[in-house]
Length: 96
Image 1 (tube, rainbow, N blue to C red):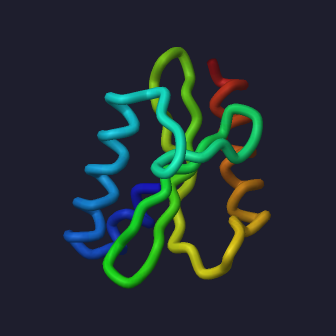
Image 2: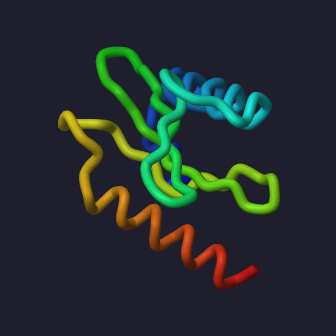
């Protein structure tokens, strides 16, 4: 997640951070900012300059944990991105 964020422009990071902060302090939220993607996995829907980003997250013990982020290139969420987030969620739960 950190590597992905560091590869973005400062303005994109700022926009993503603001939307994540809105979700973090306003949880639970729904559309249009947050959409449930699966069991205990949600996405923050972020509009950047000329493109769309998604950050997949879970909530564990009342804490928002960012699992995966990507720039959207197709209509739906790619299955491999969702699968990666679910694997990270499962690993997080097994460690707690």
